[in-house]
Image (cartoon, rainbow, N blue to C red; front, side, top):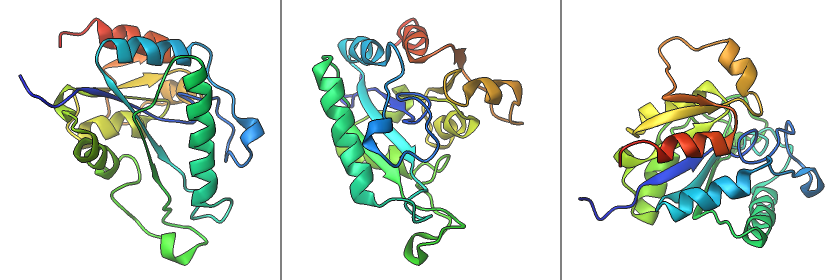
Length: 192
């Protein structure tokens, strides 16, 4: 048995918090109902919890990296107040058509590229082969495959319902769940 821990990787917007377009104000943060409970259940089962999120608004000049970090600090405080936690926050600031020259690029950290989960695995001692990805877009599901995870789950929150209605060729979800709690329940029923 590996000494590395399994993890559940989570998309942020539309999966953990309500989709708000380009989130540019802390007062627009709203947790998805039952998200805190889902995180507690997964942590109790021994999963490390990691958020991986594309934040192209940085490259587009809509907000800066400091704002994204403040957002994650605010989310940490809300989650901790509910007895939950995130073990690591990772974000991609790039966009191929950005407005900030040094962030305008095609990169390996923009989902579905595998750089963010690989960095988290190195930082936190994670076993990607026993880890799962949960998100509301097919790119999140595809990330599970590109990072050699056990599988990717699509949730119907955020953009998930519209994604479910328009499958991406060659991308298959291990599970399509109503929300983060439903996804957590499915993961917990899988053999470890």
